[in-house]
Image (cartoon, rainbow, N blue to C red; front, side, top):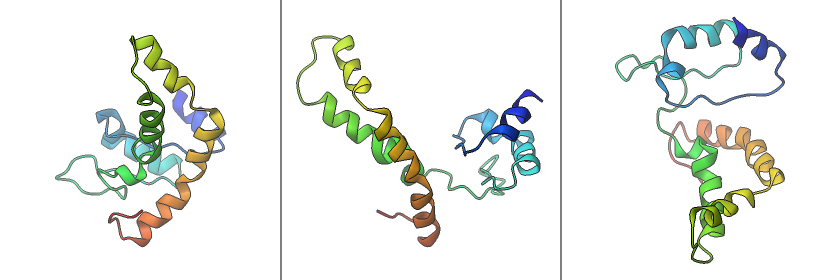
Length: 120
C-alpha cells in the first residue's frame, strides 16, 4: 500500500473527516493496525465503534479558529470581486496556521476532560 509508506515515515498526525472513504471499515482497520495511536471514527451511526466525536466543531481547526480569522479579515470592507475576497485567505500566515495546529493536542485533552461535551 502506497499510503502505508507515507504513514510509516511521517512525524506528526492527521485528522480524518467524515468522508465515506475515511469512515470505511477497511480504512479504520488499516489505521488501527498501522498507526498505534489512531483515534478511530464511527464507520456508521449504527456501528458506534469509534473513539472520535462524530460532529465536533471544537476539534475542527477550521471551525474553532480559521473561519473566525477569515471572517475578520474578509469582512473589514466590501469586496468588488472574488479575487479581492481571496486575498483575505492569503493573508493568513503559515505561522498562524502552525499555532492553530500546535494547539490541537490541548483542545483534544479539553474534549477528553469534558467527556466529549462542549468546552471553550
